[in-house]
Amino acid sequence: MPCRESGTTLRFFIPIALALGGSFLFEGTPRLIERGIKIYENLFREQGVIFNYGTDSIGISGKLKSGTFHVDATVSSQFISGLLYAMPLIEGRSYIKLEGRTESRMYIEMTLRTLKQYGICLSDYTENSIAIRGKQKYMAVDSRVEGDYSNAAFFAALNLMGGNVTIEGLSDESIQGDRRYIEFFRKLKEGTPQIDISDQIDLGPILFAMAAYLNGAAITGTRRLAIKESDRVKDMLFELSKFGVESQVGENHVEIEKCRLHKPAEPLHGHNDHRIVMSLAVLLTAFGGSIEGSEAVNKSFPSFFEKLEETGIKVENYA
Image (cartoon, one colour):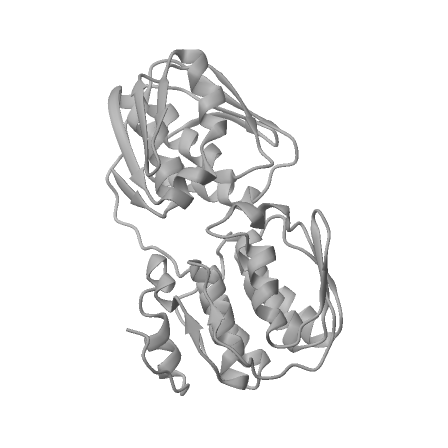
């Protein structure tokens, strides 16, 4: 299965494949393989599943059995969602025990809501434990996919910079964690806030950019940014330094100081990370400049620059 650079694809489909049983090859970029699936290795090797790593692939073989899965919930909710999609397909009742502070809990809630929508019954669900019986069948249903708050944040950020952008298609009843960008942006506009993004980790790059543009901020819960498509703390702050941004970095927090920004004297670099590219592009609407590697937006938002042009921003050579 070609996963390219999608950690979500890799982490969702490995348990589903093993629920069916057999041998499978998952292909991806070296960066994706480097990010690893250590949580699955620790869980599934106990069931006899074999893992073989290449530079740009992971081979797995075996069959997933029901049982109790103790999952480190501090790494990524995607591993938990992947298990949840697979558990109804295997025989017997299975349990997920969440260990540590659960990061991005709302993504787990979204997964559970999706399972219910498609006919899957939960046996039991508490804050740190989920039980699902096996041998269930997914139902085919008609549904509408709601708009993505994480991508909407890039365009809403333009309004912090004097823009007048209206975003349509977002559900007022959404439980997406990244919906909190509305609250975070208000705080950034009003002063120099402290913001915890433990459950909204994908908002990190755009919050860094907007904190730099406005009044600065202390942003906590940043630890997991290091294991995304790039090291989003190190790489984003390096690019922001080209605008004159000063910052301090701790193990799980970033402080961005209020300072006078200027047009970068050299091209920015996207670090092969779609969210870094989009965040830098938003900031460049105020100063002008260029981004090398802007094609990284194709990972999640191929029409990003076209949409940016529709707001009245002049964009060149993004194809």
